[in-house]
Amino acid sequence: MRTLLYHGESRLSVGESPTPHAGPGEIRVRVDSVGLCRSDLYGYSGRNNRRDEVLAAGETLVMGHEAVGVIDELGEGVGGLELGQAIAIDPIEGCGDCDRCAGGETNLCPDRRVYGCIPAAPGGFAEAMVAPAANATPLAAGLSLEWGALIEPLTVGEHGVQLAGARPGERVLVVGGGVIGLGAAFAAARRGAEVTISEPQAARRELIAGLGLTAVEPAELDALPPHFALALDCVARPETLAAAVRAVGRSGTVVLVGIFSDEVPLPVSRVVENETRIIGSFAYVHEDFDNVAAWLAETDLDLDRLIELRVGFEGIIDAFDAYASGSFDGVRTIFQPDLEVASR
Ligand SMILES: [Zn+2]
Ligand SMILES: [Zn+2]
Image 1 (cartoon, rainbow, N blue to C red):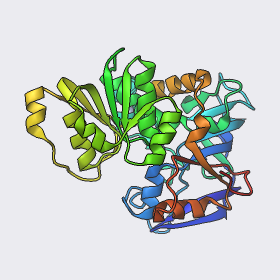
Image 2 (cartoon, helix red, strand yellow):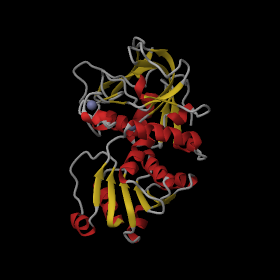
Image 3 (cartoon, protein in one colour):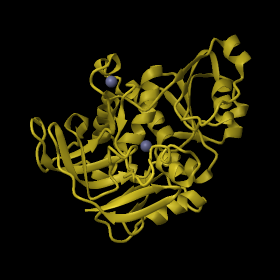
């Protein structure tokens, strides 16, 4: 089968590799749609070392942890799933033995594996992919498979809101209008909160407004009183963390959803005087994943707006390069192995 191979040091190639088979407890899918995640793009461009550091000399990695496909092989002992069924794959696999896994917190399992992030667990930038059956979330009949590829990144935002517990009528600020920020905004809005998104790019703000959400420029935010009950930093830069801390009022909550690459300064006297609660949020648990999949099946929103480019094997390396050079910054690019020509 065709596969996109990452060799480390910003080198990608399309090659042939043996089609995998589903082992006991596993399923194989014919890949339909896979999102290009910022973590893949940053790992490729060298902005961080997260994709290179997992590679031993001469090893390759199949990235793509936001995969959706149709089951075409069931491993031994798999029940409750059928051939031909469309599923999204939760890429986080816990060890199944530790206290964290027992509580459903596979994201905090010290021995977790993430499909598409280590060579031993290949991801979805391929014609087929194998994953544990327990990680499969069936897609509702009629749900676009492309939309299914949005579940993973939207769920990152969902988890942050779930941890903080947004309540009806509360003012919630989301810093950053990318797909993770939108996931947080949808999650808070669904819980009845009054949501504002801070986003510097005008085109993004327009897109957000088209989804029925309120978007403001970061400078506009500075002019508002610190009246939010909850702020989620979905960007993870020093200025976005500071903006989140300054935006919440007394006994407010700040959730750090983005992944920081370094230590950052904190307006700490504000934290103390306001008794601000600061919570870290890392990835998600499988229940969050299922909840977002269920919401996608019933939402009236036009989430096609989030998918700004579709590429097949022909266009995927160009898409990585376009993001790396900054010439393209679409909310989501979706890889579809059957697609011959890139389309917007
Ligand atoms: Zn991702
Ligand atoms: Zn575990």
